[in-house]
Length: 352
Image 1 (cartoon, one colour):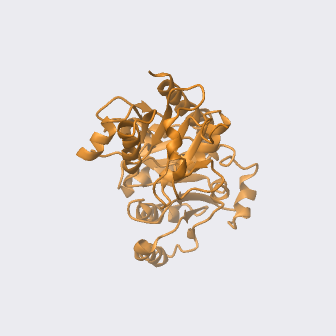
Image 2 (tube, rainbow, N blue to C red; image 1 turned 90 degrees about the vertical axis):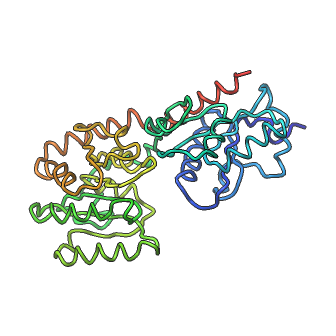
Image 3 (tube, rainbow, N blue to C red; image 1 turned 120 degrees about the vertical axis):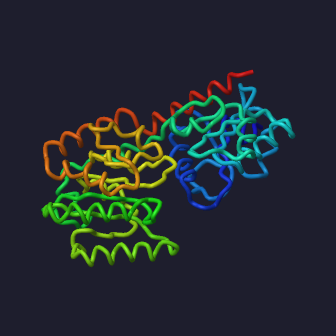
């Protein structure tokens, strides 16, 4: 009787219970990878039961390669997942090829450099990330679900659906409410812009954790003091976030730091142009002057200067929205990402 892992080619370990960008990546990618025939299973806690998984008691089965292959791929995304892969391959002599996906945009510690040096191959999620690696890598940008993030048939109706007034245009800023995400930069930009543009409002969607609750309250107090509480809306965290994107006319991503950042892709896929700071992968996602603008981080003046033309010129707004949608659909599907990763798997599995 064949073992339950005899048909599995790739192990995707996930060794943290805390929800993170890595968790989201695994949850989004694994079903698509398996639809494409890549035969991926997960190992570890913190993932939904709907994903294929193996238990710790199944690990000894990794000594035997899958049918028709000499190796499996161990696809790690964190240090704590690289190290067990090295032990399984080099100490226990299991037939594994080790792959690491790096999203970090900082100088690595000596420990991390050593772990990365032991990998058979490395994927970088952006060219900027690749620049911090001291070895060859394959750059594969993240993709998104273009069915989930898609434009509305009628944007005015989309606004009504989430409780917004369809008589106004809306600028959005979505994500955790905190200093790192630049929520204060967005608020200060809106305080400068909205008084001169009475047909525009702003929406901040996202949660402030307990650590950042005082930061959010300070922003709300600043908005109230400016008399703009009815035009700068804090709507909290929502599970139907694609519907909120569909209600927008312009999106701003003012982060001070970002590892990758999916919000510009999600906005563009719903037909919304994006103005973003030059952090993370944003400069690799947005075509400056066509699908939106890239501006210097941490500068309210620069965001005001970049955003105002969109508030003044409906033609520019419409043309940029069309370009953003086309760009997202042509370049950033999750199927494209999964296919590119599958090509790396194939090269590793063919290697002697």
